Length: 593
Image (tube, rainbow, N blue to C red):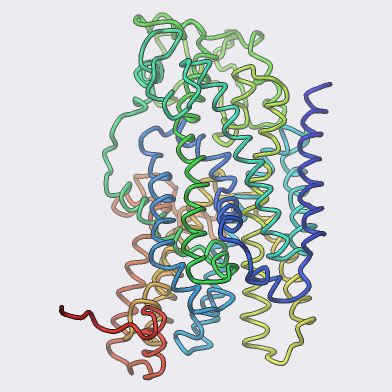
């Protein structure tokens, strides 16, 4: 059986499973559509939350970022994991106790304001649509390679599959589909990682293999990696970075953004009790850790495999790397995996010095003494995890498995985000603002229509994303960090925060963050419309657009408290409601014995 047939079998079987589950668990009421009826078991919800959380950015792009960025890219791991702990500890139980369907529902009632609700809807849709762009982009990468079609066709197929199971199944169908998707993606991620760790280090546990000895050279794996990448002009893989402020703000932005992501928060409304929300958060962290502990090893080993593929003499070297790195592989001898990825356009080769060999190095380095006239191999970061099994010559069924896993990761998160968007439009805008007398049947129809519309918008933007998957997702986290997270924190923990303060804070955080991002990434992410070039020389105080969400959050907090202090205090019943959400009824003061 050909590799294409195997890929088609794995991907087709997974699609049939997802759509079958959606039909079996089709939502029959608005409660089933929004929160799966509110009766999901904590372990089931934890697994679904993990799938919802581990998007194309986690599965496809994060290891690619770690492979290319080294130590700095660990900010993604620290920010996303730390943010999830923040969400589980500070937000999820209280929001579940409040008992509303959606994040804008909480904000609208807590801040006793239709304007606050509507601004929260705008913030939610802006962050979620940006996030979905990354998922569609990642799905397009996976489809284009494994189904041997164009990236554009891959994105449209992904949109169709999400439409079929998300629009009809709602949260009920999505929940059980995401459980299946988690099983697919975690198996697809870990099995190739185990194979590659065994090949490179002899250790079957990837996270331990990362700190083991490289079998071929006898050197520690990370030392070997540092030597080969530095010899072709890149900074050492484990090297420290100069701009600590940007790294700190970026990590903080990802943390705040994680805690403010509406599609994850809404999952905690699907369990029966507040205690179940805590348990499902804990289980989700366990399921997430299985992938996140493996990702650094996958990224490091992918980078080493890539470099030693281009410079095969370097694989067994212990010293004298300079000589090994002057003998790159001939283009006609390139391995099959490079040929197949070239067909997708995600790997490109240009023989600048016409010597028939592949010079792969940091373009800012000068190797003219070797007769090199510039880097000749350009590789999209998003392909490294997907290409890893082929780079390591793993069996065809492993390649088919990772194809299904990469697509599952993108589709699971896309479905959760689209549900958050549709519920915000149908429940918070239409039912709560424009048409309070809408029937349940009409609300369901509005939810499905708005989800279909969101799919079309996300697909269109996914064809021209403002960066590769994890970068685009980081922008979404920044928007959520600057707008939604502060409103949730103040809504739960500040009895003095009023409606005017919350509205002013959300607007200030959202607008400043969007203006900063659009200045460098293009207005409304339209290519070529950016005001300034997106590089460190033009960033304000060296702060990347990906890191600005943390500053936007601080602006949100500062404006909100300043406005609240100069305007009327919240009504007594609102203050009492906030106290009741934070503390159990009937709990008395501590007794002195």
